[in-house]
Length: 354
Ligand code: DP6
Image 1 (tube, rainbow, N blue to C red):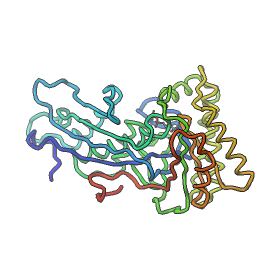
Image 2 (cartoon, rainbow, N blue to C red):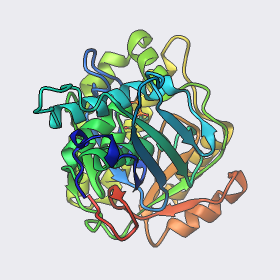
Image 3 (cartoon, rainbow, N blue to C red):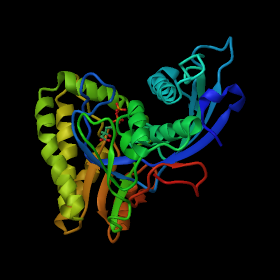
Image 4 (cartoon, rainbow, N blue to C red):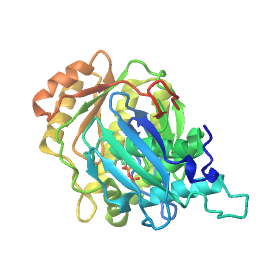
């Protein structure tokens, strides 16, 4: 099938589905450079989590005369979303299409401008509760939007577009282990998902409530008001380098220890913001304390957290189930044991993996 949107409205609508997995940072992105949209101030290193996913179905159509100027619609887990949140993303898609398909015939040189998108996306895990739902969602959205309009595109281009929707989404485009450098337009894959078969992440959901403050607002408040922010940004590259080395050597203890330092330094900057930002719940702290105890007993278990109260434990296959059992009474839904997962897939399950 041709994907040239310049061929006229008769070739629309087109529908494409995509599936992507959350990207769990072991060295955190927290803070944006001013200027370009969602450009990281800190380098991050992440693991794509295979056990949970966002599934997106996107239809692209050509607006006819008299249509509303912005007809994009997004329904997330059955709930209609505020189109303003998605406007910069869809405008970026339209721009990419226009750049790739300029009209040759003296007609409009804005090929993408007439297009609008209708999206349905479903997560199989709690949305907006600090489980990187936006990372998986925008990775799937970027892949489906580009495929529906331009055909198969290189992962760098999908990653760059996903970043416009949500910074961490540029990592979710790839499977395995990823890096996203400060100031970089896109993420890169460090190693495929087969690199470390014994690695497990145990997600411990302690709340299904939507987070009170978006990571975007929290990040910006931290940058604007925390006296620790500059120190955090200055320290992050060495921690990210250490994390990459731990992954290169498949050194679980080193990975666990650096991941702990990264999330705790990130939260320290947040605690010092004005007003302070505190995503943790008593259950989160109880798990953190419990893991300390397990480490004292010799178990290889190290936690990380994101913009929410859930705790994610980095461990190996031999200990994952024990971690899940240990904290069962503190959880609102069963623990999720995840292996390292694949990148975004487009179309049916049997189709391409990036
Ligand atoms: C704590 O990618 O959700 O999970 O770019 O503003 O959409 P925006 O933020 P987002 O932030 C993720 C923050 C984090 C750390 C990480 O994933 O690296």
